[in-house]
Length: 230
Image 1 (cartoon, one colour):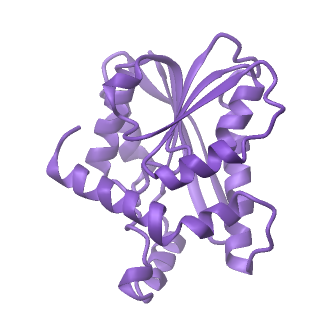
Image 2: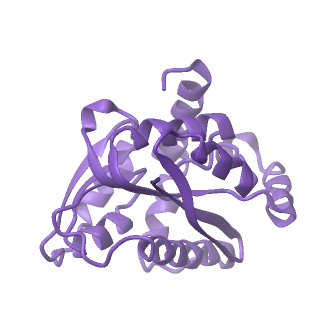
């Protein structure tokens, strides 16, 4: 996907996570003490990882899995522990370096290869499954749907991703976020209606929308959905 709007948003996201917010995201990935708001985000993300893992087989031995937008690598670790050969990629070189340096030793039979770059790059090859946790939430519906179509062209079995569901509570939190100084703001989250993203998925030849579940915990709200072969 080479559109100017996508590239501009992608570069803003990379700058934010590699410079502005990198220390905060590193703290989320550890057991360091957090304030009340960030603590709910940490717990919410942990619940979302568990929900997404429930959409995948317990045994991923022999599976090649792309962790698209891997951040600190916590999801990649769980995939490897199920036996997967994981390619973990993120826009932020700083986060990828942190993930590689903090990688636990007990990965079982799986393995992880960390890369910095665009999750949509064709050079990454083909995969049995793709997970994309909170890595499409900053893109408008059309761009997110196109990204899923691009990923599906290189995926054999399933994609599990998250999006920001359009809810009154989420809209209120976004309004509060706009009160922060511009330099401290994350790139805007783009809430979408679940039925809208499901309809886009059903329009991808050979694929359809599967199970979906929403996690809402404090200041964290996100919805997981699977994309499966028709």
